[in-house]
Image (tube, rainbow, N blue to C red; front, side, top):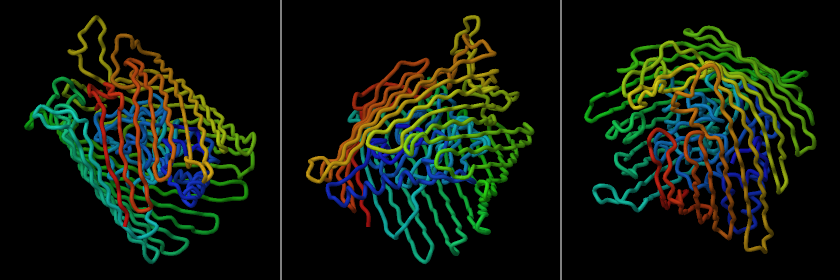
Amino acid sequence: MRVAVPNNKLLISLFLGLCGSATAQQQADSVLITHHLDEVIVQENRLAAPVKAVNRNITIITRRQIETMPVSSITEVLAYVPGLDVRQRGPGGIQADIGIDGGTFDQTLVLLNGVKITDPQTGHNIMNLPVSLSDVDHIEVLRGAAARIYGINALNGAINIVTRKATQSGATVSGSGGSSFKKNENNHLYGAYSIGATGALVKNGVSQSLSASRNQGNGYRYNTAYSNYRAFYQAAFNRDTLHQYNVMAGFVNNGYGANGFYAAPGDLNAEETVKTVFAAVSNTSRINPNWVMTPRVSYRYTKDDYIYIKPDKYRNLHNTHVFDAELNNTFTTAVGTIGAGVEGRYEHIKSSNLGNHDRTNLGLYGEYKSVADRRFSFTIGGYLNYNTVYGWQFFPGADVGFNITPDIKLFANAGTAQRLPTYTDLYYKGGGIIGNENLGPEKASFAEAGIRKFSGKFSFAGSVFYRQVSNFIDFVKDTAGGVDPTKVPWQPQNFQRADMTGFSLNSGYNTIFNNGSLFNSFGVNAGYNYLSPSFKGDAITTKISRYVIESLRHQFTANVRTDIGHFSVSAAARYCMRVNYKDYTLADARIAYRQPRYQIYADANNLLDVTYVEAGAVPMPGRWITVGGKVSF
C-alpha cells in the first residue's frame, strides 16, 4: 500500500502488517521497530534526511512487512504499491516491467543500495537483479521526476532496493514448494520450488555476507518453465570511525520459456536467457566535521539471448556493458546543507540485431537544503547533463514542506527529468518490430502536492500530481485506413506530448492489544490511485499502443492482518482497471507460524482463480498454493 511518507503506525499495517508472536517481549519489539521507522534515513546520494522530513512522495516497504506478504519475488512485493504498475510475464519474478503513475518501464530508474541499475538495451531487463527477496532489508519508492536527485532516466521516479547488512555471524536456510494442482500436456502437475542459503561473518569491524538461491518450475501453461540462479556478496570495511568501504557483487542466470512475451502467437516456442554480472565499490569518508565525500564505481554486464523459434532460428544475442563512476559530496554550513556531485557513465552494446554502439553520459549535480526547522523546510537544485548523442540539458527541481502540527504535514514538489531512448527503441528489427533511429529523448515536468498524518492509531495521506512528457516514446501500430493490425509492425514514435493527471488516497488503522487479549495486534489498510492520461500533438485514435495507453486508470488495494499467539494471518486484495483492458480483482492470503529461529508459512495466491493479462499476450497464473519456511543458525 503506498503512502506519501509512511509513519510508524501505518507502516505496521502496510503490506499486511507484522508477523508477531504472543510474548510481551515480542510485542515490545514490534513497538520499537515501529518507532524506528519514523527515523529511517532516506539516502539520496548527497542529501539525507529521516523519512518523516522528506518533502516528496516516498514509500518505505520494510523487511518485517515483506515477511508477512504472500510473495516470492521483489516484483510481487512492488505489485502491492498503488501507483506502481508491475506488469509481469510469469511467476517468480522471471521478467517484469515496472511503471510509475502510468509511465513506461523504460522511464523508471531502479537502484541497488543507491547504485543505478541501467540497461541501455531494454528496460525489460532492469529487474534482472542478483538479489533474492531474502536479501532485501527494505525498499524505497520515490514518485515523480527526479533528475535533481538521481540523474537521467528517473523520468517518473525511482525504486531503491536496500539489502540487509549483517550485524552478527550466522546462517539461514530457506525453501518452498508450490503448485496450481493443474496438469500439463504430459499429465504432470505444474509446480515450482525454491531453495536458498545466506551466511554472514562479522568480525573486527568487517561485515560480510554471501547468499545463493535457486528457483525452478515447470510453468503453469505451455512453454512457461523457468530456472534461475542468483548469488550476491556484500561487505563493509570500517577502517576507522571516519572511513567506510562497501563492496557488493552478484550474478544471476535467468532462463525461461517466452511464450507470448513479445510477438504472439508466433513466439509459442520462444525461449530467453538473461545473465547479469554486477559489481560496485564505494567509500564514505568524513574529510572534516562539515564535509562528507562518497566516491563510487560500478559495472554491469548483461547477456540477453532470445531464440524466437528453436533451435536457433531468429536468434537475438545482445551483450551490454555499463561502467559508472560517481563522486558525491555533502557540505554542512550555518545556512543549510549543500550537496554537489559529478558522474560519468559509459554504455556499450554488441548485438546480433541492434549492431555495435556506444555512448557516454556526464552529469553535474547541485542541491541546497534549508536549515532544519520545526515547521518549514525546502530543497532546491538541479542536474546538468551532457550526452555524446543528445548534447547538453539542464533539469531543475525543488520541494517544500510545512508541518501544520507535529503529526500533520503539507508538502509540495516540482521536478524535471529526461529518459534516453534504448538501443531497442532505436535499432531493433524483426519479430514484428521496427526501430526508429530518429527518436529523441523524452523530457518530463512534474508537480505534486499533498497532505499526510504521521502517527497515531489512525493515519492518512493524500496527494495530487500533474506530469507532462514531451517527445514521449511509445511502441505503436498505426491502423489508419482500416489496416489489419496483425500486418502492421510495432514502431516507437515520439509523440509531441503526453499528459498525466492523478491522485492517491490512503488510510490505515493499527493497534496492539493488551496481554490479556486473544489477539496481539490488528491492522487494516486501504489505498486508491487514479490516473487520467491524455495525448496531444499526434492523432492517436488510429494507433494501438503497446504500453502506456494500457496503463492503469483505477487501482485499489486493501489488506488486513492479525496476530494470534505465534500465528499471523493476513489477507489482501487488489482491484485493477486498465485504460484499454477489462478490470479484475486479485485476492491473496498467508498464514504463518513464527519462532525466534524458524518460521513456516502457507500462501494462497489468486484465490479467486482470475484469468488476466498484465503484459504482452501472457495470461498470468491462476490459483497457486505455496508452503515454505526458513531456519536460522
